[in-house]
Image (cartoon, rainbow, N blue to C red; front, side, top):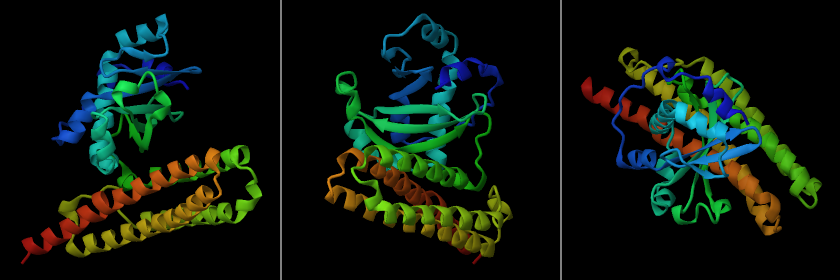
Length: 299
């Protein structure tokens, strides 16, 4: 965990200006109540929205970091929320739980060996009254990715989602050896899921090569929009097939009372569900609206 050390190296004046965007009330309230979790060696620090250390007891180094890099942390939080607004539906599909917790969201950053540039972020929500006393009761709501120096995402960020699913599956396998009573009894499920992940990765890579990395709607014809929409829908179908298999596995684990392990599969399914919703709302949903508007404007 080297997030603090990497963020120390960044100067706020070197970060690209974020474009001002109009955010809805949900994203505005989450920004106001966003807690950061940053690693410094073996210690994970939980920072309040005003950057006071909630847990554990801070040392001089972390206090000095916060004092000197508050402007970087401000940028970081704004960047996180703007990415969630544009490239995710994570807050939208989990809005009930977030609202019940007074819009408290925890963003746990993991630097991705990029010199402090790129991060994978796991998001949780938690009852604010019990954050100190029952921290482990936090609710996992999903994950996202940011690049502090490049906001726009190629292919709407799909490649990052697919790479994450492959990585997370490998972590699930590791946990299975540790947590399952008889791992070999579930060999068929692990094999099926692996095949679905492999197929998703291979077929999506072929499809994405035929699509524009960034969409300039002013240069796309109605026929282009229809074809691009169909191709992204096909990728989504691979996500749905994988999700169905994972859901069946989760049900079997619950039936067999594999309590120590099933939560890892549930978290994996949560990521899949979020990605599928992203396709339905932000990709295919938006493209379908563009197609309808294109036809209307050309009648």
